[in-house]
Image 1 (cartoon, rainbow, N blue to C red):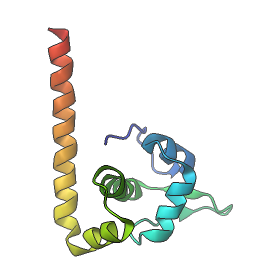
Image 2 (image 1 turned 30 degrees about the vertical axis):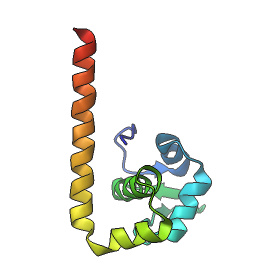
Image 3 (image 1 turned 60 degrees about the horizontal axis):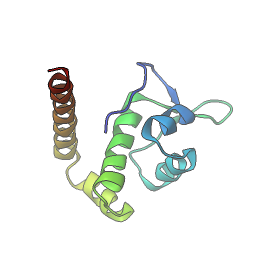
Length: 109
């Protein structure tokens, strides 16, 4: 799943939730469930997500929503070999981009 967010240093929880198409409560729930997801909080307590947080959130979304893992299964998968998992996910995202570009070219013909 590709997320369309402008290049910024920090993202608010509402922006992140809209980009993923989920409720802010789900993002907050995942924050409590997954150790890899730790957004910064400002003085008001608002969550500020970095690019690294978005990458982790994208992996959680992929495992839970797209692959159908349980929360416990996703936690286990993230802990056992995160480097390999992230590399595999990055490859899938690149292939999806190429597929979309090829579909656009086909439609133009």
